[in-house]
Amino acid sequence: MNPHYTYLVLDIFSVFFPLILSFDKKVAFYKHWKFLFPAMLLTGVFFIFWDILFTANGVWGFNTDYTIGVYLFNLPIEEVLFFISVPYSCVFIFEVFNAYVARDVLGSCSTKISVLVSIISLITCVLFYNKTYTIVNAGICLGLVLFATFVYKYRNMGRFYLAYFVCLIPFLICNGVLTALPIVVYNNEENMAIRLFSIPLEDTFYCLSLLLSTVLLMDYFKNRKSRV
Image (cartoon, rainbow, N blue to C red; front, side, top):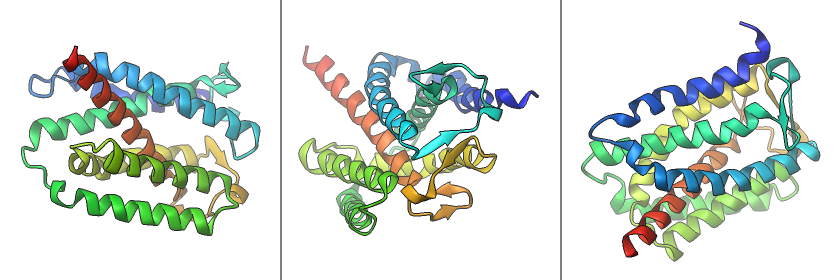
């Protein structure tokens, strides 16, 4: 395979099976598309804007050996597609758990998990306040978790955390490929320089923020629809 197609193939592979399985009768994920796509659009706009700023300021960059050379907003087109394939796949996993796991196994301790995540995020912000990638990821994660738990009072935080822990596996595999080749090149001056194999530790915050923001927006759109 031409190496220039590597990132594009990774995007396609990430979403291929969730897309095919979206028509499973019990999950019926396609029925959520009218709420998912607007949520993905709003989340994607935010993360792409963040991506543009980080790329322009040298927080990370892209290896042109693994991209096809088409750019949008000064980002490889594959990076933009990442914000379609990965959120779709992660939210699909969330909905699969909702359909097939009847018991909310983490529901009773979801607030404690939120407090723990908030404390870790806050400590990270304090210790690495001068690291752009670290403080932005930890700060956004902190704000989202506090908002979802104590302001929006999202009723499915337990189910969200269960799905998040599972989503970390494919997410980190995907990011492992991106960072091992590397397709995405991180500037260690702007992060903690702590890696899970080749993956910056901050990406665990990143995954949580990307998934939670999409799930919260979906829930908001569903609730608004039910009130009409």
